[in-house]
Image (cartoon, rainbow, N blue to C red):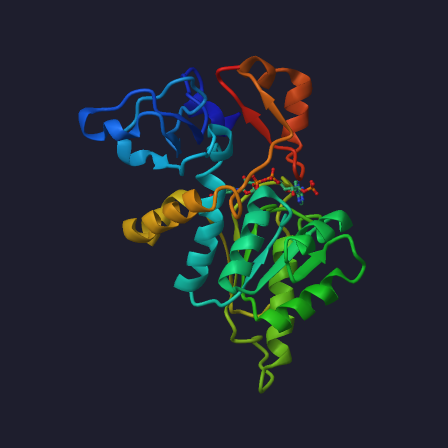
Length: 296
Ligand SMILES: NC(=O)c1ccc[n+]([C@@H]2O[C@H](COP(=O)([O-])OP(=O)(O)OC[C@H]3O[C@@H](n4cnc5c(N)ncnc54)[C@H](OP(=O)(O)O)[C@@H]3O)[C@@H](O)[C@H]2O)c1
């Protein structure tokens, strides 16, 4: 409870993002009335919100609030992975828990934008799922030859940047395994031996905590590597307003294709607090997101 102490006895409004239809608007933005908009405004688990017009991402005609409900966090995170790659001088990506909602978006973005991507999943059915979306490289941590397939994919793509949603995946070893495989791949093309390891810089960002196990680092990757945390909000600041607007426009345009989200069930606030339903969405399993409908 230590880390929760500052939060105790405080009322906390919940809900990162959502979508709805504009009921009324200020004088300068009356044209928004009746439009479907998405936004990440905090306190989004509400029937009505009053927000600045500029925060709203206006969807194209024919987009429902349910289709726009997840238009912010996952789409912009997937797009921001690509921006991080460019800013930090990498040319290809590795992604874990890759069959996730976000992972499927990333597969489509990378395919459309010609960015080599190495996907890591833990079930054979998810290898199929991603291949059907057009993924070229999908490695399965449950396969005996996981490390060999990962190294081959890294040699082929030259990926030196990884985004790990698990933190402690594959018995805590996953972030370290990615760095090790990158080192093996880099040494395959090294011109001479160095006892300090390859001078290719390898970076893994942990951006989620799907597995609460400790992260185990066996440091079999020389001295040119980094492991850090990654969060969308500060990254938006680094990207800058102009680029961020372009990314938002792309999300609105492709909300039914690249950035489409699907839901196992639509639930009310009351249902959201039922123990059986909590158990179900807390699994964070592939394709089992729940859509909260505050009007239900
Ligand atoms: N840092 C940021 O700014 C940021 C922004 C957006 C999202 N995120 C994070 O991104 C992650 C993905 O979000 P999402 O909405 O796309 O999730 P999602 O659709 O609910 O999918 C979760 C995925 O994680 C896999 N998974 C669950 N537990 C796992 C474990 N212990 N080891 C390996 N894989 C596991 C599931 O695969 P199985 O079916 O095999 O269980 C599933 O494919 C979440 O952790 C979220 O918090 C972070």
